[in-house]
Amino acid sequence: MIRISITGNIGSGKTFISKLFGYPVFSADKIVSKLYSENKIIYSKLKKRLPKFFSTFPVKKEELISAILSNKKNIKKISLIVHPEVRKKLKIFLNNNKNKKVVILDIPLYFENKLNKKEDIIIFVSSDQKQVLKRIKKRKYFNRLIFQRLKALQFSSSYKRMKSNYIIRNNFNKKLARKKVKDILKKVLS
Image (cartoon, rainbow, N blue to C red):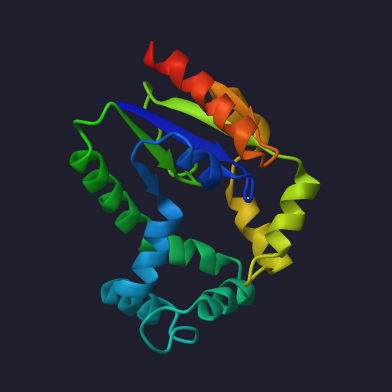
């Protein structure tokens, strides 16, 4: 199985690019969202660790935002509860797809959480920062301070670029992006 990891900054279009490969995608963001809405154990741990912010199940986006805005150390507390569960889900995903030729890993904190393997193919998705900020501001729960705190968790773009096998300059044009993905797949599979 070839593991292709899609990395890049917040809002660069990692999920957009991931879907274009046509292979099974592990989306850490979707898993985290599902954990917040379906996993009562995660909720209980968050409530115990940050009782001031979490009142009823399921975990609400507003509560997470409030906790993060209250104290930047709360991101770390939340991560210590959520990330081990994401790792478990990744392990299950890889096991369920072990007979697939390729799997796509859409994991925003791929390097930061030391999920990279030596043989992984890494693709850095690069996007114009002004365009990214414009797109992110349209998100329902956009908050500049949250954005800055989440961005601070990530390694620099230059580090990710350096560690990547390929770079896709994403301008959110599906036709161009599809061609870039096809070119990379051709190289990876040959």
